[in-house]
Length: 454
Image (tube, rainbow, N blue to C red; front, side, top):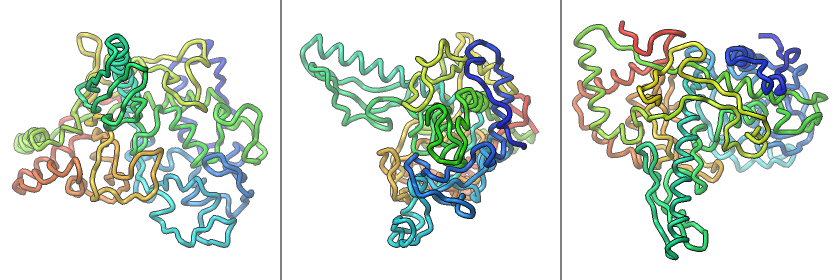
């Protein structure tokens, strides 16, 4: 893919209605697959991935596998089974390594002082996740956030009216996030809140659940991995990384890239035509529920509205917000772009079969191999991984260390220990049927039906 710098997307044109959803998807696809180079502004010679100034780095120290920039293209990591998907272990990223100037484990270099560090303590190694169906995931998180914050507002109103603390359960779409107590003075006790930040904003991206939107994910990744600095994050006509390029990614460019990811087709099912194999898959699906796997990997969550709007109303500072545009760009994910598409129910809602609850869970010492805390989330907590599309996006687990789905199951601990133990108590044939069921959850060819029988 050639450099996209000569083609820019103007947010004014988007706001004026000059772009259809398909047109934004097409340009976002170009940006997602582009190999950024120095003419585009790739590299951040004078800043870390967190935007902190550093001593300028030039060739051959313009790339660094741990502290980054570490890639030229989004598709360099998101490519299994095709652009937009996950990545092999060779594409693993080192989350939070970008906070350092230049990781080389040499205490004599730029005062980084890595002599006491190991590969595990300098960053958290993570496997690349697939982005298929991510527009629906962001919309689910938005609706869950609205519902949780409405419960908080209700508790506050009751406490103020009654002059006494009020505790309400926090539940949305059948998922419990603990409880919250509102005090008459307007304060809250959030000590019983579970699996979400105290502000009750559900964050569906990153394996720790620390990123609100595809837009925030894109702004972060462009700077971290490629050294491409977005105008909305770093300011217009500025050059904080001192590479001689300004406005490396326009507001419209980020919108297009976010819309591209939001419109990627959803994964589906590949079911066996052979009756015996199909019976085994059906038995495995039933066992998946009875074992307790479906408590966290909820087979489907109901989305009230599939209309994706950009920007996200819960975007943090440094990302485009609703107040920054005359009206959000909107697209109906049930019909826009290439399929497969999820159908609407009779009431207009959509069942999203992503096999997640979008909640953080304690997975115990078996999974607690990270040493660097990300965004205040304890190292033993992980967002429930989406299982749709998993069968052809190996490897598995947060760091890609499980090479088979069975390996991933037996590595569960903490809140997943009971389901793991129940799985291990099954016969070999029953265990195989659960694995056979998981193998049906696949990323499908473009424009195929949601279920394929072969």
